[in-house]
Image 1 (tube, rainbow, N blue to C red):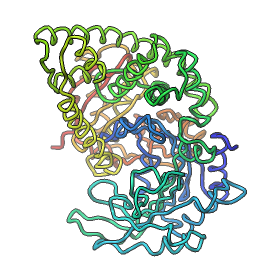
Image 2 (tube, rainbow, N blue to C red):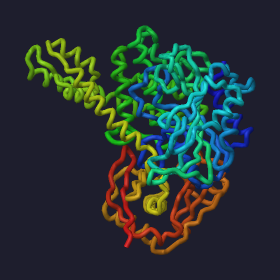
Image 3 (cartoon, rainbow, N blue to C red):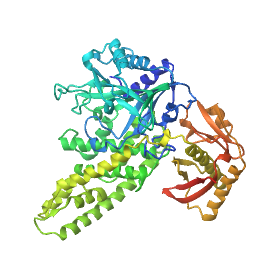
Image 4 (cartoon, rainbow, N blue to C red):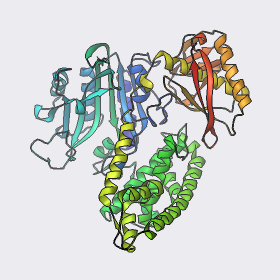
Length: 595
């Protein structure tokens, strides 16, 4: 039986033999992208290169990327959805296109040397065509050449088989690869577009061959790219012949630890199974969030809020299994052991993971007590037979972490009812708002290389240099977030920066701007870049060749760009706010003012 480690190795080796450079996984915390909280797909860190910027490692790339998606968080606990996952990806930046991409995917999946999957269990979807672009007969034809019969090739519309980065820009049809499961078709028309479970998507090949213009029309691209993504968890579940991702070698040890600590057997009943799956998924995700190179901590905003929510969901579901405080860390230690050889940063940050999980569990124990008091307050103002409205029930869930089942149970003990339909409606509204935000993931962000964002990107380098000049080399970048209007820069520092110090930082940056210094980009081997004194955000995660941007006398930094060509282009740098971001991390918000 193939292991998850072997699948990673085989994938990278296969594409290496096809002339691809193996690049390292980027952080799960996106850099310079205000549109997403986490890296949601393997292609996300590569958006600038998919949009035309040359990559230092060449036109053929492959990797295993750490990803987090929270849009499907309420689906976690079924057979295939995870919050954290690894995406195996390969890319062509203006090199090969549909034929090679499809034939290589087929070879990797079915060849005896590689995965040796049963060809009769593979189904395909391709773009059905519309007024904007023709039916993708090319992809369908290549699949038929490979041996996939027509009856297992499905033509689906844009919502199923089309990819675009935002509202406009490079886009194109995709072809998706599915495994046909043992579930019976839901109807004679059952297809990969169904959610019935008959078809399990494992790989998606996107062919970016069009440019969508702001007026909604499409034109062919001069440079065509391929962007693919294969979910490691789902694929290894198929290869290991198990019914869900939670029975694979990536999850089985985690589930076993939960069983040992709770004394309850996985699979005892549907409720227990779902609770253990959610706990296993969320602790794995929390471990990667805290243990990432840009490791985050629980808070009430941004990534920290998501992390807090995950840990508290673990505690809530653990309550069904007589969970005790301090157990989350014991599960996380198993996660670290599973991934230590692939992601050594988890081992390096082991103590931080331990501390943050324990602290958050203790905090939530206090929150639960406040929630109980809040419930008692609500109940005391009601008479027997009254109904707790849906908004109040949702407030107990969202603010204090009370599952609706607990609220109903406590209400029944006092002779009260709960408007569960009203709760469901409030919950749906909350999901819609969350999803609306999540769906903006590629609007702007890394796909935005306007002059304004390029200039602000250069300003972050100068601010970073100013901070290190004033406070020493212990100051390290912890993240940045750039829109066309402003920059936000997070860095390691233990105290508030005083107003006179902020003024000094401003003046330092503005002196560099006034000096009218060219911004020089060089492509260098990473070791040579470091030897020349270039600093880089977690430079051990860069590839063999990197881009180094130099502002002579001020800054030399490894970065993917884009940047201004001269500091004189930036305008006047002005700090608007300095505040705490999380424990040991400060945040500066600043703008560039053009005269």
